[in-house]
Image 1 (tube, one colour):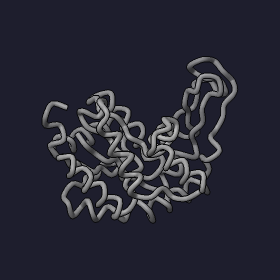
Image 2 (cartoon, one colour; image 1 turned 90 degrees about the horizontal axis):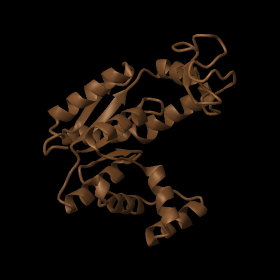
Image 3 (cartoon, rainbow, N blue to C red; image 1 turned 180 degrees about the vertical axis):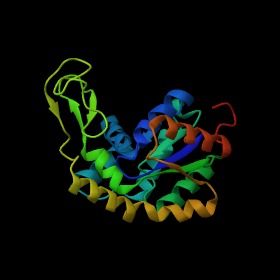
Image 4 (cartoon, rainbow, N blue to C red; image 1 turned 60 degrees about the vertical axis):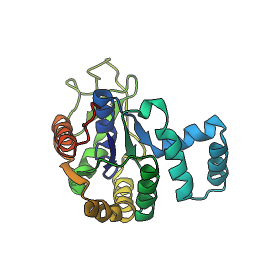
Length: 223
């Protein structure tokens, strides 16, 4: 099962990727995590990545693809992978396809979590968490049963992420539209682009993704 999850920040990609990991035993490959792991390993590839990052430059496409190539050959990717954060351009998509072809494999599905941007702004800017145990809450959808007291641990201090503000959220959405949305026609032409309702209940989004995986044949082979 080789898939890509697409969607703007806050669409729920991380949540759904974790569910897929648990259900099907395939790892989520987030490019940021892979870069940090490569640098930490001290490998030749990691040293190259560190030089680029230290210089404040964008990571070259060939280096990113090479990093993904090394990652998918590790044992935990035997059943496949879930890519998150790559590709972002048509050139990267083409390079990824070429690399997978060399390894005798291909992408099974590219799944976009469609969202209503105004609703997503409300979803993100309204969330907060208990400072003591991390339990999540929301101004509109899920407040503690006793105002000001965490349901899970009884804590009375709460916090919000600095980047969960309207200006930052809208900026990140605009970046998604400009940088990532242009690759959608590439995958649509290839016949592997699917869309699910990212604004639905979490369990319903999971159900829709499972349906896509079955219809796309991504579960063939027992993954």
